[in-house]
Image (tube, rainbow, N blue to C red; front, side, top):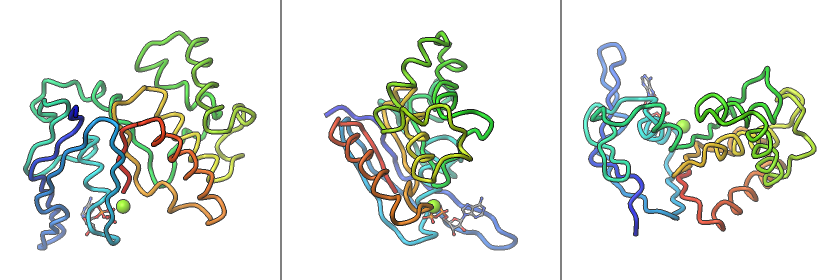
Length: 199
Ligand code: ADP
Ligand code: MG
């Protein structure tokens, strides 16, 4: 099996006043292509910190993260190019509030991948259709339910064709009746053998 991401003895300490919080105490695992990995743990056990380390939003205190075998911290990988390959979906959606749904999905392909606007729009519409939101393409995030916003966020992450998608508690901010629509999208991604990690 093809290795996508490998964590080797990742530690992350935070200094809070005189105290040191050991958020991660040596985490090691490998995710292979097509795998759907979930990690469970109580609140405060370090799940978000681990995902943030994977996405370079956080720097591990020690340990190594390898992406397709290369050390992510070694500086050979361009951070933005790497982040484009490692999609992130947050607990609180984090959509751009001043952009419509389709503009949210188009943004990174246009600005990071330099894809022509018309092509980016066409692909964004296909992705919104995949998450069941084609008819909401021109709505702003503030006009969408939490479940709809999270589905836009998933389409936005998919727009860069990442090698792995990371989800940080993707349904925990949703009302119970809205989790089903997001879970259906996650199931569809798993059926398509999308490499994913969900915490
Ligand atoms: P989880 O996502 O599993 O709830 P987190 O990764 O958010 O856990 O947090 C793990 C631990 O690290 C917690 O004790 C939290 O308070 C601490 N922590 C996380 N981020 C910071 C930070 N920026 N500064 C200080 N402590 C932090
Ligand atoms: Mg968390």
